[in-house]
Length: 144
Image (cartoon, rainbow, N blue to C red):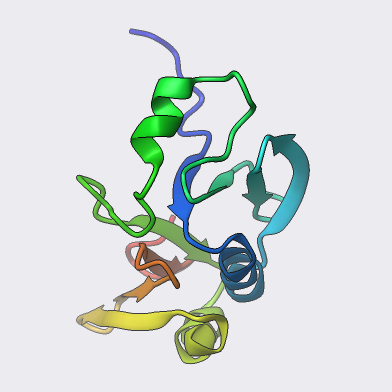
């Protein structure tokens, strides 16, 4: 078996970089890492090792890089293909409730909210491009 350190980033093609930056930094507290790859912007949750790459219009990336990949990504903003959603773990139920109530202020919208026997809460929020983000909070039965 090959040893892995896990998934190191999620890459999203977005229509409007500033709008997406406002959504992910405002709603989830993600911060710009300062690493640049052409037009790509990389965000990270403070204290975490996750990376979210935002690719404006599918044309980002270092000039002369993986040209075939860049061509494939043009026009994909909001198109999820085989990806259903990705998840963000929140710290508390208060954060969970606040994320749902403030999502519209950051261009997001609640898709659905689920509760299983009062023990496992999760919700799905669409970002401004239509990508779906599942939220949980630590301590819920589904949390880590």
